[in-house]
Length: 440
Image 1 (cartoon, rainbow, N blue to C red):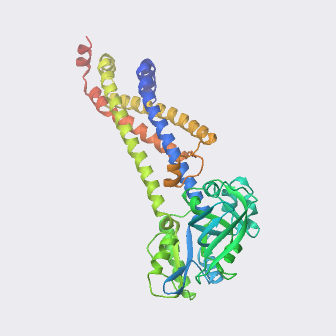
Image 2 (cartoon, one colour; image 1 turned 90 degrees about the vertical axis):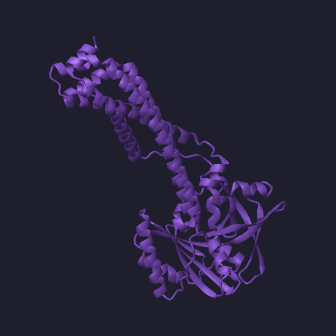
């Protein structure tokens, strides 16, 4: 093997023009795949971070309360009991976000957003993901710990007449009892966009949300359970089922609803003829199933593009090696004449293809990783379509996973070796005499 490796390297150096051309093609495809995969991974990480910050935990225990048969409200009245069950039954809980939710509108002195927005009550000091992920473009987001405060996102601030931190705004909503209520708040910050959810979300302290909707002091809408370690979907489903059984034993009535966001479950519950409290246990993948499907489509598109490019490059590599073997017939005849066996000739040409694939791919991956780091540092603006469809933030993020680089390197090296197989088989079948005679 060392001898074959030395001969293969010598042959690549001797025919460096062809090697540079073919290696450059492999480097180009690996560079492009690294950039595309880096973008996909960056968007996925950004999306997951935005969802964990605003929308859902790995496991979510939400409440639906009906004061009458036709009015459903996102309220969990037995918050403390549910928290006790969660802490007892769910292993490795990092923290539980106690969130209030409802539909509200907001107005300034000059304009109003009459559409129903998602009023989201938070406990700033108890939510590390929110503190780490929510970034202010203007103002100070940490002031959400103070009562009667509000954080908007850029599009909302613009629609309200380009309001600025420090201005007074008015929130309005319909309470579970059907009454209209208003609360005056102070705008303390305009935050950077955090995906599609930020377009329709108003952030305020839980106490302010309870005052707006006239919930009792201990009420919440959903308990977002965040785990210390990421678990596979199967284990999350098992944990969800165990938690459902424990909540039932604790005296809570559970409701069965199709996967979807909290608003779709409210709409479904409204059509049902029951009153009182129902508890719903859901997973993050169910809360944002539509956006996860779009991310899956992006991954599939990148995979398809990679396969097309791979077929084109491997076809070109195979054709180039066919030509190379025709030009090196005398060399093959000489090697066979001095005693090299057919399997060694086969191994030599396969090794040349694999070396070419490895060196070209490795160069492209290094360039791709550097390019990803540079693009990530450049903070390129995210197109609006990507923000809406994929849940990305204001700036594109590129992330490189070492395991992904290794996988691409192994795949392209193996494909280069396989593309070398047909020409290598032809070279191995040549007899010494025929090779020498055809070389003239």
